[in-house]
Image (cartoon, rainbow, N blue to C red; front, side, top):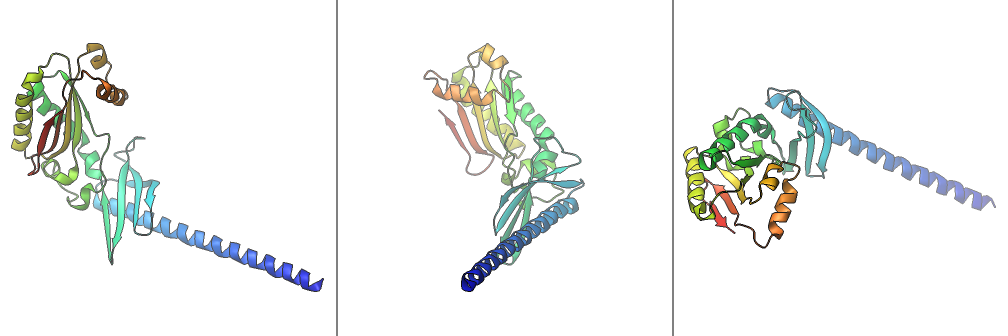
Length: 243
């Protein structure tokens, strides 16, 4: 009986010790995570003329971490400023996509000017739904707007939808005009897609919330007009494809 009681006590003590060790490991990991998060926020505060606050974790593993931060200048609910951390050997690398937010309005206005020069004002532009991570691993914190739009790492992508009335036969002219303007401005566009719309009701109701439904319906339409897909405009590996 004594032996059984003693065995039970030893078992219970072992379990408590294991729970304690696991708890300590979790606390240590949490403290490590918090410390790195603080360093990432400090990196942003030191790098830019803005004040940053931790928002939420994004990705975490032993070699890489990404967090979302907010700032005094960009604090909207959908303003996801990413900060990335990666350990490569003995080196620590930080990166972020802050310049996307800094130049978002200016980039949008610039793209609208380019498209207006080609299509007049009968189009709808959709830009900036997927800002990339890692923009500033190469670009300096003080990079100008011209630096930003001329660097492939900025990953500028946009979709445009044309109002009814544009002739498909002019697609070659459109492609050349778009290319020439971006090349003149030394701009690199990672991806650009131009859609034709035949229905004024659909076009007038098109916005950011309904764009995805429009694109799905477009792909399912057997009688759809060709789409102009352009990639790496202004770069050596640029390509144009009407499909």
